[in-house]
Length: 346
Image 1: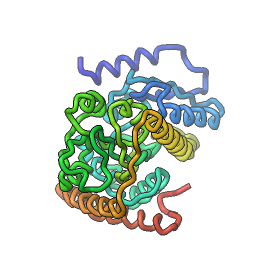
Image 2 (image 1 turned 180 degrees about the horizontal axis):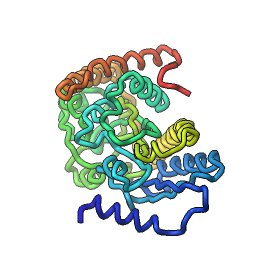
Image 3 (image 1 turned 90 degrees about the vertical axis):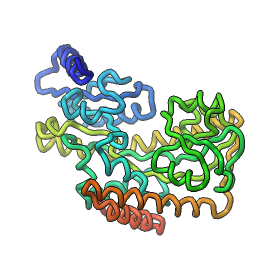
Image 4 (image 1 turned 60 degrees about the vertical axis):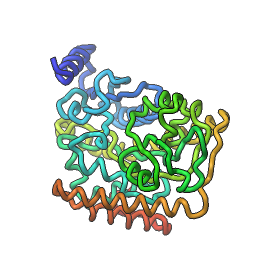
């Protein structure tokens, strides 16, 4: 039996429990995280909103801790009915070429809320942004804390200090680090702690919340606050089949719920970022500000690399350069203090 078949069977068995009251529709929500996780607490805020605003006509039954959805096949699983709604990670899907690249198009962005606003503006103009997620209806876009660089042996104050360091980094950052003389490696975050503890790697590109959540403050001594750019991505979705089965009024309710979900996620991530930084300081990690000009130089290199990634999308019939240029223009608007009115911003 395949994993997908097994999950479908599990879902059908779970659905055989107590029947809902007449006139009540129960929708399943699945996440790989436990109910206590920062993301899950935001999910619960959204669930309560939907249930309250529907007057109890819609209820959300949650399945936490990977009980239904996997970490890497979640889009396929939702599309095939393993769960009605769930957390998705398109940037890790091999077939989602644009979604894997587009988070790197936001060099110079200032906040999580700006990440979300700019993503929505770009997605409004370029329908290709949804093409990587067939059979799904996006219910929330998620931003994230800006990664810095945690090292165990020596601090990173200038870009020259990166030379010779073996660092765990994601694909969009790896090429930039390599150009600066670092040795980027591709490890799962679960492998980072033991790799740093044993000296297999010198450090990791990670946001402050990971210093606490993954106990990385125990194996690192210095945290450079050089900001690694990152953008938003579609993070919660409903099966398109389920979406089409909803009444227009209920579709409007779920659309209103997008802002609630996104705000709860942003607030939770911001709090986790602050808590992670304080945890690391209390553990003795030294926070190192980058040398003057280092951030601007890094942003320029990162921008050049993101344009290279954007141009490569032409192989898949996507005008990635146009999308990246639009994202850059929107970042410039926000840096100039202008309010974005595109993307149905609420």
